[in-house]
Image 1 (tube, one colour):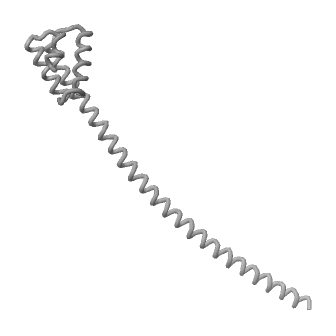
Image 2: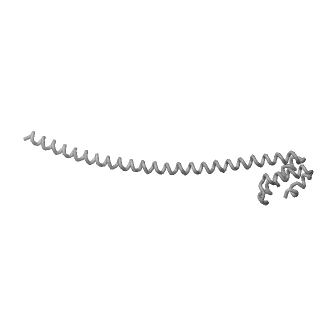
Image 3: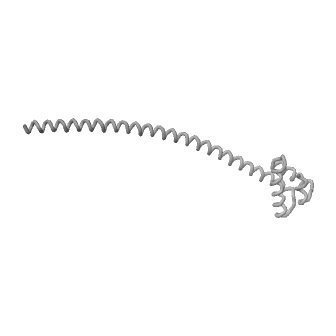
Length: 135
């Protein structure tokens, strides 16, 4: 009788163990699907973020490039002015500031304004009069 009771208990425990394992296996599969789905969603989000960062960094690079080009163009134009205009450092600094401000007031580029100022220097216009001559 004892053997029969042990056998029944063993079979019941085995059935309970197998049911628990089946439930755990199903839960593990469901969890795996959730993780995989979350992984795909995260991967898609990262791809979108990467594309956005790439576009933003490209726009920043273009902006910096244009700013650098404008600065180089101004320095080149200003060098022409300093070659033809005789004045002190203070006078040239004031002239440079005035010419740069003019670009926001007149429908002309910095380079065009500097070219007129350079021509004024070649014509012998006094340093104090170059700004009004250029305007």
